[in-house]
Length: 149
Image (cartoon, rainbow, N blue to C red; front, side):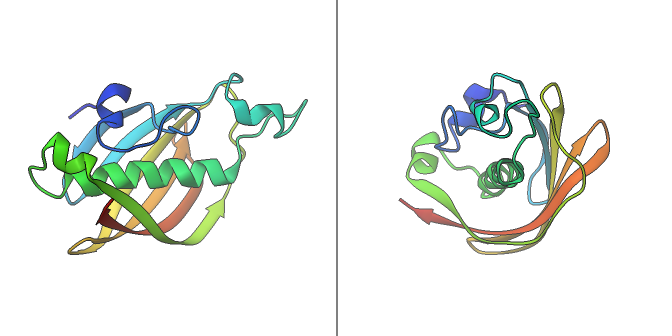
């Protein structure tokens, strides 16, 4: 399954400049998701992080993981209509074991690989990993809950 940014926006409420996922290239419901964000010098964060030495902020990498994880959770909830999805939101409850291994810079394609560790009802525990050219740059364990707005 492939989802472009238009399809992604039907599932999660994030919009520019805080939509941090450009495309989903693979989804295995209740198992895993692969998606990516193209990092460009035009991203607003580079105005201040850091002038003359642009590094994509770790907190933005974690947020991109969370958005990808939210899509995996939504898509794993069964046949939810667009209207039903529009009335729900994913709240992240915790981010644990976050590690940053290598800087992400403009021109990189940041690939998110998310997998389900555990699911119980509306609660999801996910493993998130971020790669640039198959090199692990960040990882974290994410806990989220799908709730009504």
